[in-house]
Length: 81
Image (tube, rainbow, N blue to C red; front, top):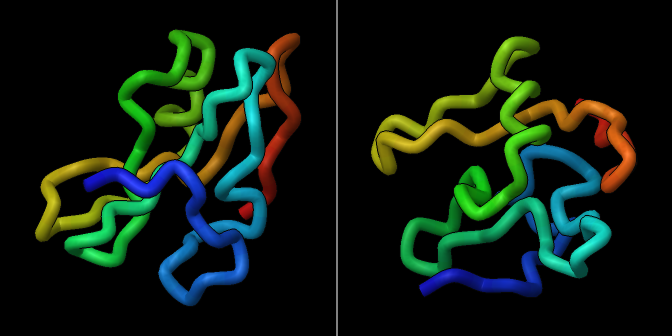
């Protein structure tokens, strides 16, 4: 159900770096094939949750927040809106 190889050029992608890989080689952003929408990676490490204070895109039909901003940390580069 989760596509680990989400296409960053896809129209469903909410930001250009949606498949940016973290230090542990896990994609931060994952695309749900059924809904054709990006989902917040609930397996992301705690530091990525800081982005919720900056603003998120809420996908109503999934009732799942998608994180629009990823803060620059020691394990990841900053994604731009």
